[in-house]
Length: 419
Ligand code: LLP
Image (cartoon, rainbow, N blue to C red; front, side, top):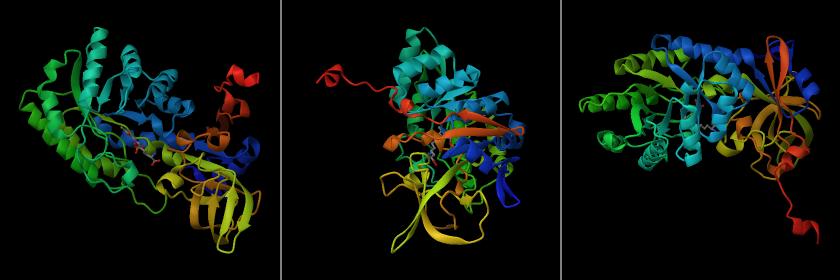
């Protein structure tokens, strides 16, 4: 379900006319529907009710404080990957015992801070990292929980940049090495290996790879239990795909039906880390047409949002549907491009797009996940504002940047000021 629908040929977010938002707050503008966000979280929770999992929303997908707060308020935990994300999680009052921390490159400072704050556990991605966490915990005279991130080596049909569960990826630890680590677990006196973690990739629309990975891990759990090794948690990561174009992803319920029996058999407390599934279709990016440029070969619709606002098309060739805020029946093939000085700066390529005029607004759909969170200031562009529609009202959840924000941390050495 999502709450971006046409009524009388005009696009609405819940009951608010999107064009009104664009005119009031300017463009480019990210617009989120609170009802959609909550609906997706609740759908997942209901589908998995029989397991009562801890659903740790993956902060990287969209880390705006209002989004995090909305989810934490309805019971979500958070999956973090940096000290910055830890600060955000604490800022919105997420209980530390609902925070799990992955990343192949946790620094000593990040590890120390997470230990001090008492997070639930680290998802450990290598033996050297385990050694380091043990050392830092020893320095604090603590025994802390960790889960081993397993790289199950499964094939996933998604963009090659977003698969993470193949043995050639940098993530996780292969099963043989994990087995060896568990056998020597008593060497690490300051960590308790209490769980396993997998995350095999993102935008996965079929259940099969999840089932394959969970089966591998379940067999592994049986194997280690024969050695007297018991665990408490199984973290199955995120990765559930959504509809951008004509995908037909498994619904939360079908996904749950496929994997719940396998998960139940493990007897472990289940953790999941969905990002895109929750926020992907809860947000859109509004952009204004600046110029229509016709070349001998092509039509370009030049808009005020670029790859710095939404990098997914440039980075992955990702498809985002593009629709006008006021329905236009005629379409024409065009490239939708931004103002950035790169040929890779496009939001759509060779696409039948509504025949818009200068000054019209377009909505780039399904931009809630990995949209703003991957945005940048490239070309010294000011990052977009973000608004959330909730309960019939509009809330600015991030102000548009101003030039001062761009230069805030920059310093000109004194000798350059006095030539
Ligand atoms: N857990 C871990 C350990 C992850 O690395 C990720 C995403 C997630 C959970 C959440 O995955 P999701 O449910 O959102 O698929 N920027 C790319 C996606 C990168 C995903 C990185 N890891 C994109 O725009 O498609």
